[in-house]
Length: 252
Image 1: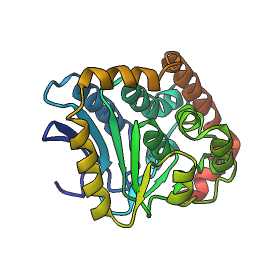
Image 2 (image 1 turned 60 degrees about the vertical axis):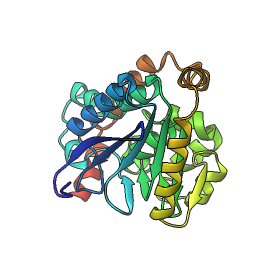
Image 3 (image 1 turned 90 degrees about the horizontal axis):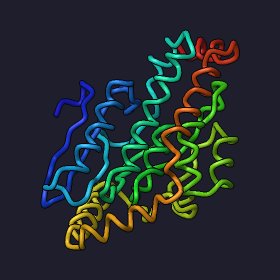
């Protein structure tokens, strides 16, 4: 697969569906890639050839740099803003509703929406290069859409810490201590070996038992369709502020 063009692919091996996304801008995801990712996750949930899903990204050192900056700069009205910020909401909801366990494979740094994707997996494995950051406050918005997923996995204390400290990358080991990552590996090769072993072992379990466990894990989140839409609207309004418009100019 060329690493110059954005893509979302799914590769089924030994009953594991490996969903991979890529964008040349540090895996920052525009709306069309997010929409395809959400649909691919939904389709994997109904594909009888797949028992377990792995979510991964292309490239070496960045899992996901969040939402597309190019699209963010071009938002000029609240409705467009809501649609833009709904991109990650739709992926998180697709992951939440997927009837199969989703394993996260986080090989490198992850920012903003990417932290939300990691938090929405059911079992998340990382390399030591997988530092995390919530940078939204820097540009006058906040991690509103991804906040519920991060808070659910790491707790309000950890989520609020990284949301307020918006300039700092927190190391993978810290994220493990806070419950985001299950294990942290020395390099990508070790990570990939462990992901493969874990996913294929899960395929030997009763798929109905895993479905019932997934329901338990996500109990109390049935309102997230509405909640994340509200959060997207909040971000969509804030991105129109003079503060954010001026901040974005400095990044152009």
